[in-house]
Amino acid sequence: MSRLVLVWIVASSMIPSCDSELTDGVVWQRGEIVDVTLKAEKAVELTNVQMPAACALHCAATTGCSFFFHSQVNAICRICNQAKCDWPNSVLVSQTASQYTFYRRKLWKSCPVDHTYNSTANTCLRYDITHDAGYWWYNARRRCLLGGGHLVLIRSDQKYEALKAFLNETLTSLQSQGEDITAAAFNRPWLGGRRSTIVTDQWLWDDGSLADHDLVGKWDVQQGEPQGGGAQDKLTLSATQGYLFHNDNSQMYRHFVCEIDVAL
Ligand SMILES: *[C@@H]1O[C@H](CO)[C@@H](O)[C@H](O)[C@H]1NC(C)=O
Ligand SMILES: *[C@@H]1O[C@H](CO)[C@@H](O)[C@H](O)[C@H]1NC(C)=O
Image 1 (tube, rainbow, N blue to C red):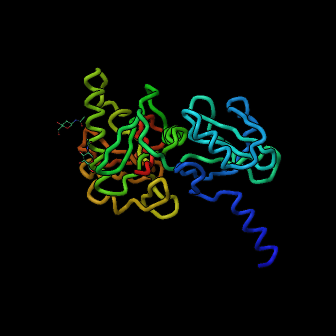
Image 2: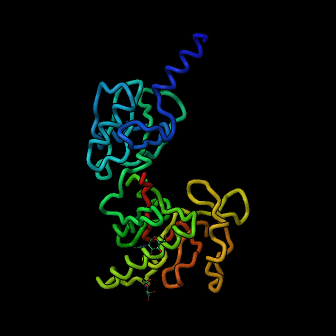
Image 3: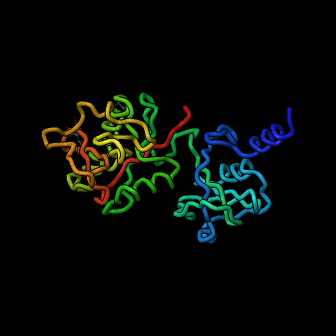
């Protein structure tokens, strides 16, 4: 074995790749390289942490920690949780001392208490109404990511049925608390689906997988869905229209459904 190969093996075992299992069955996904200089005051900073795996252990042991930043250069570990730490808004291209690798918790060991688990569909869902007016699609997506999940993906009929049952129960309960669930923010929550910017009229789930097949027969065709026009490029469904799919402009303010992937 050449020295070059040896160096490569050592280096690659030090740096976990995507989906690596760093600690105790919790799967972490390596994200972008980001500049966290501006965010420093919001995170808990630990020094002398040489390895991402050690940083992951700190995060796993911290309540509410669903992502962390690690700098191999400075041996600094920044532990974040939803309340304290913001999502990075800049992705670096050049190497600097403030370069951190971002990791998020990909697979959870159980469904968090503020989510609802459906064992038939093995899905863990949360309907987010934290902001009265709702959020536009990109912020809804960001908020799900901050919670360690993603906007719900509906890649099977089973998931669709689980989502419908979940929304029916949630909206019925909100209605009994006096909410007007026919208001657009409640009635047409954001999902993790969008129109392809490359292939005309192709729909994708937000993990990049094709959605067209999953949507067959589920569009609200009576209301003319999906509507043409590039601006209506995000996926929602209408509770009052039998939970059929609609496409909407991402700048509409809506509540949304987050999903957490559980390893059960
Ligand atoms: C769970 O999901 C299944 C479909 O996979 C659905 O039929 C069922 O109603 C859901 N259960 C609850 C309690 O929401
Ligand atoms: C929930 O389901 C019941 C029974 O199918 C239906 O009558 C009701 O309108 C639904 N409510 C919502 C908010 O989806």
